[in-house]
Length: 394
Image (tube, rainbow, N blue to C red; front, side, top):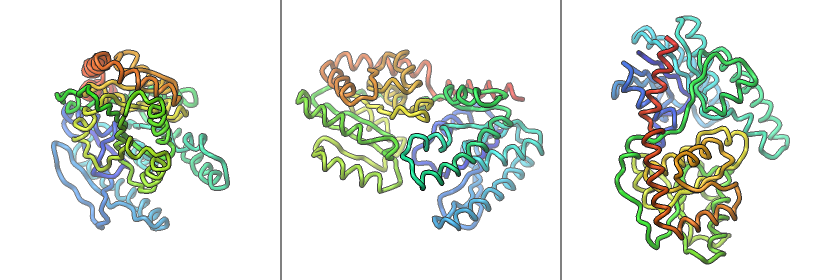
C-alpha cells in the first residue's frame, strides 16, 4: 500500500501531532507514505528528500505579511497539487490522506476524481467556527465568525464527499447528525513506544512536584492551573511545585502568564519550561508525582482526544483530570489511573492533595494506567487498526 498525505501543518514538527505519530507507526505497515507539506524556511525552492521509507516534499512557508501570506499560500497549494500529481504517477498511490486543511481537502477531492483514488479526511479538531462560539462577541469577532462560517461549510462538504472521515468518536458523531458520512475511523490519542518503554519511575518523596504540559494559549485558560496551586498554597497542607511545559510560539502567551504568576505571588511555586524536545518529554514528565489535565469544558474540547492523560499514564504517573472531556473521562475510568473531578479549582486542589497524601496509592494508580495504556492505547495498536480500516477502502 502506497499512501499520499497532504497536510497544512509545517515541517519539521517540534512536538508531533496525534496524526503525525500515528502515520510514523503506520509507515511500518505499508510500502510508502509520501508527505507533501510546507517547510519553515523561506527559500524559493521545492525540496524533496527521502527518510525512513517516507518521501517528504516540502514547499516554502508563507511570509508574515498578510497580503503576501494569501498569495504565497495559494501559490503553495497550486504547487502542492502539482507535486502530489507527480507523486501519484511516480509512486502509484493507493490512498490519499488529507490532514485538517480545507484547500488540501479540495486538492484531495480533485485528485480523487481525476485518478479514482480513495480520500481519507483526517480531522483532529473541530474547525475554528466552533471555538469562536465560546469567545466574547464584538465587531472583530463578527468578521472572524463570517470567515469561520464559510470555512465550516467547506469543511462539511469535504467530509461529505470524502470516502472516510478519520476523527475522534465525538467529532464523527457530531458531524453524522448534520451530514451523511460514507465511513469513519476512530482517531484516538495514543502513546509512542518511547513513552511506554521509559523505565525511570517517579520518586514519591517530599518534592510534591506536579506537571502540566501542552499549550498555554488564552483559550485553554492556563490561569486555572495557577488558581489550583494558589488554593493548595492557601490550604497549607503541601508545599507544591508546578512545572508547566509548553510549546507555544507566541511569546505574548508566556509573557502574559508570567505576569499573572507574579501578580499572584506564585513565582516560587510555578516554573514555566519551554523548548523541550518531544523525545525528552518522558524524562521531564516522569519526575513529577502527578500530572494535571485541566481542559475548559467547551464543545470543541469536549469532543477532543487529549494527549496529556495518555502520555502521563504511559510513563507511570497518575493524573487529575476533569470529567467533562469525554475521552479523558473514559480513559481514567477504564484505566483507574487517576482521579476525575469537575472543572472546578477546589475539586482539582482536593484531588491533588489526596494523591500527595497517599503516595503508595498514587503509585498504584500510575502503574495501573501505564499497563492499560500499553494494552489499549499505544500508537502501534492504533496504527494497526487504522491500517485494517484503510484496507477496507481498496
